[in-house]
Length: 207
Image (cartoon, rainbow, N blue to C red; front, side, top):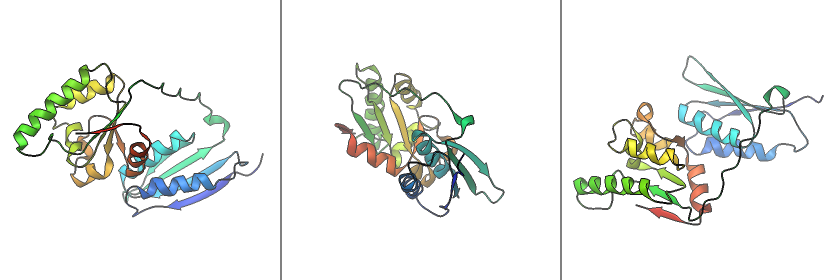
């Protein structure tokens, strides 16, 4: 058995999406012939931990997290060890008329905010009744309020999630509005993932 490749990444102080970008660069630099890999990633915010973990797992790596007393984190990312073998996740099937929905405001349209809230409520409820709901819904800026415990539309968003829509919530936006503890729908995302989805989608709908 060959010695595993060991790589250390100090990504403390890196703003989104740099932790994911730097981790991806490391993955791309790995020797394709090296079966066993251990990568330790030093981070200083929970949103980055979530984003790097999700990305690493999507690439077939296993991830464990250690939290330190100084509120920093160490992720240990591994590949190729026999104890890690798991059945692969089945790929999502392609859906006809699939599209990505981009929501960057808790209101719909510009003008009166009260009317904007009424329109957003009606829009989201209508989406849940459509034959082809969005494949992915991305919430950024004040749109992230819709996916929190303070949102009147939370149950509607969860119903969209239950029928197969992937809900992504911008981690930087949650941090900015101090909503990390109030997120109640979907999964924390990052700008690398959001930009990749927006540029790869055949159809993007913006409210």
